[in-house]
Length: 474
Ligand code: BG6
Image 1 (spheres, rainbow, N blue to C red):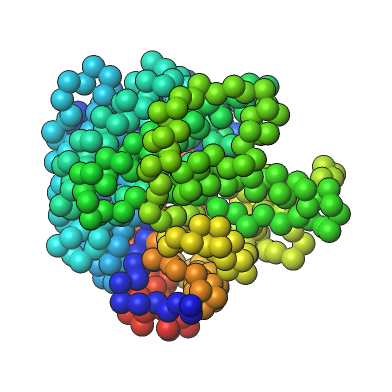
Image 2: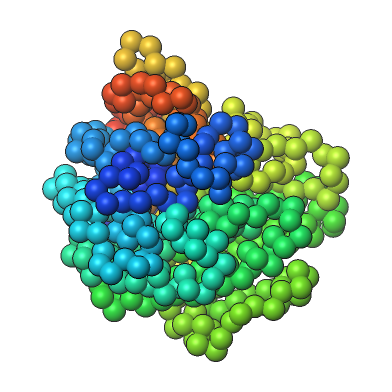
């Protein structure tokens, strides 16, 4: 059935705690694993994961954009743009500073912060859409267990979920379990907080086991959420790419099929309640026998997600020929697609890919979709108190057109929440100079700046888009 943008459509933006809040050790909070990362080039940023925090160095997430102290001002700007929703995450180590390990009680100041934040959003007509863990495993759990390598993590995650569902049951009705759970197929340090290189022969066995623990924890979160907040919905979250084969060579096509299996392995499980048919062969290929119980499988079966949220920045083209020119991607590298333009960071922009991808997702699950991230990371120049970011407007306009087409194709879409609606710290490089926002934040990659906020040209444009309910895209 043809879908249109209805009055309940979510228009807003998306951020995460560690990329915005700062205050990384204030009011009882202790560091998250992401707070070990130093920023710089992508390689430097990843390499700093697992090294002890050196207080003499600048860590981008420690102060970030100081959303912790400035959220009221930022929410006023979101309101001015017309947002009716904001996706954000709770920092687990603000609630349980040690991840629940030896934390008898949750940290009241941390709980109060989110109470105040959710109240402020609600007062301003903005519904919070909350990610339970956006790459924010507490450092204490990394130190104790090496991240999600241990089954103990499931119990600690359950403890955290129970506390936040109980506390915020009247304030938050839309939840997302883990941010981009499939990103762990590319990088260990973010989602599961595991220090392991992708070329390590143990990479896939370790990741597949951690994935199992996270999937079970996600199922428990869904169960608790439905029990404690009966009128709530829980979403899975995919780091999404439309994957193309570089050519009609069956070898390229086969590779595209296998890459898609890696991409969908997690959400196939969370949306349908059982591991996909191809999972056994995948495990066999990597010589993995999972620590998996009958009880785990029962939990997966009985607690599927209600909707699918996903990020979409680019498509990915794969070739069996390693000699093909490569381009950078969101945590991955792929063959360069000659039909597409790239961002300054080499991400290939592909709005038609969004429409195709949404159709693929919807035909796979037949559950509502939510665009939980989309946007263009670019170097902006502030001149006379604003940024003429027509390149960002063009990118977003093309993607809005594409999702409207997908809706006309019949895809159910709950909303559009572009990433980094206010400039924030990049997840893959720790830079702030990779900006996504409608709002410019005066801060550089070394931590200098007043943190003052400025409206970019795209701010007024997005305001018009929202007030016309997606009709006026000029
Ligand atoms: C997604 C993450 O992968 O992409 C965000 O969920 C991240 O946390 C976003 O910031 C954009 O990536 P980057 O590396 O440009 O910050």
